[in-house]
Amino acid sequence: MHTETLPTHVARRLETDTKVANLPVYRASTVLFDSLEQAGARAEAVARGERGASTYATASTPTTAALMDALERIEGAGHATRAALMPSGLSAITTLLMALLAPGDEVLVIDSVYGPTRNFCTTVLEAWGVRARFYDPCSSAGDLEQMLNPQTRMIYLESPASYTFEIQDVPAIAAMARRRGLLSVIDNAWASPVMANPFDWGVDASVLPLTKYWSGHSDVLMGAAIVREALWPALWKTQRSFGLCVGGDDAYLILRGMRTVQVRMRAHERNALEVARWLEQQPGVARVIHPALASHPQHALFLRDFKGASGLFGFVLDPVHWRLNPHDHRPEGRQRALLAALCERREHFGIGYSWGGYESLIVPARIDVLRTVRPWREGPLLRLHVGLEDPRDLIEDLAAGFAAMRAVR
Ligand SMILES: Cc1ncc(COP(=O)(O)O)c(C=O)c1O
Image (cartoon, rainbow, N blue to C red; front, side, top):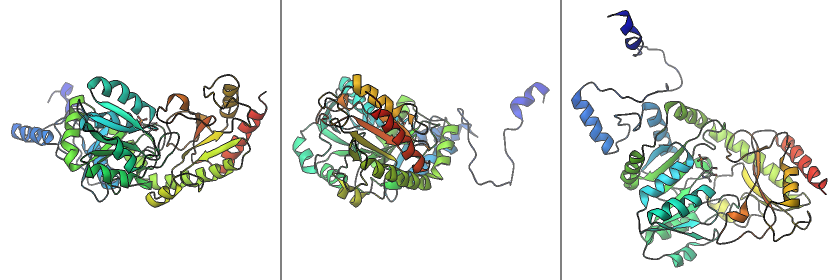
């Protein structure tokens, strides 16, 4: 062998009996075969969507296959499910919707859905010939049944919902959907499988933005769509057609986050509840919206269905206390100044979208542009993600924000 060949030839196989705790990271595009026959057989297995089969890293590598397997066992626990990995939570949602819907179909979507999901429904889905109708987040299964028409194919849920944290009666809605031959799909971002198992509630598919709690460190984007086995061929075909896939390094980071997600979420839950209870006592706070507080309108449903809470919740400023026009929800003038005083220059709370990482975040909600069925009639709404800091430091930080608001003329 000539010297020039050596760099391409050596150090490509590991012959070792050294054992370590973690899986290696497979960085790959090309997948190799021992024979043409094996290549052909693998291609057929990939086309059938068999677990772990790969002809190219877009299908899977041992690292991404390990994460898919983990999702099936944890999010799909006790049910026959399959999981697909996408480069973000949003792409998991959009791919799943395109896989399960077809032109002419109608989907009923919760009004307090994650904003970019709403945007996808009213632009891409609409142009493709799928109609989205939005429903009141507090709709019962009976209310939704009244809305059905012959084109309705799917009910899309999010519980608790984005920004306003309504809890849905998912078991009743999923049972009604099944009885009427419809699909039920849920975004399980808030609870993650640590706090809720939507397949036990009877849904057909769930989405997990792994960017949030499974990552836990605000350093990687990924999403998963998890479906009951019967829906897998449609999801796999759509994902493959779009060429959506994830890399080994990112999959490894999610697997790494998964190892500690349970203890982190219990800490997020504890810290967030402490901050929420403090906020409930503050003059100028009209209402704290946290499903685990007794004051939450669907607290009983929360206790019935969830194993616990995460670190994300909202609170509403009292417009009378802060001398704001209660009918004007645009963040302008005095309202803008008050929100800036509360959110800017905080020691621990960053201003940021996403959530689920170790660090605390605060963000005002543009709720005036987010709801169509039940327009927002209350004061300015803020969303907090409570991280892993000592809640006493977080409370002190928020208290400084309230003091800064009081200084606004
Ligand atoms: C409820 C919900 N679903 C989905 C997503 C999308 O996840 P990603 O940021 O990974 O696209 C988010 C992101 O904020 C979210 O809040």
